[in-house]
Image (tube, rainbow, N blue to C red; front, side, top):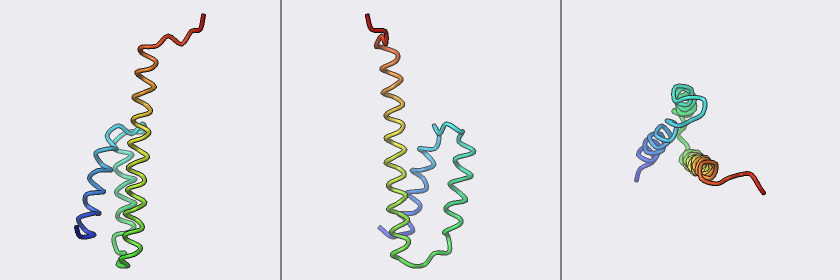
Length: 84
């Protein structure tokens, strides 16, 4: 897969994950767009791979945060937090 395809795929995955961002999708999208535009002129292959790796890390962190949010919601909904 070419670097361009990797970057486009990363951008699309981040946009998809940004739908549930606490500050709102528009806020997330503008910040994401600025980050990608800031680095659009980068030509060094090693730097690009490093940035893609960082983006993959961000994707995993966001997925983890959403899973934790889901777990906490389910726990709050189905378990009594009062101890007798």
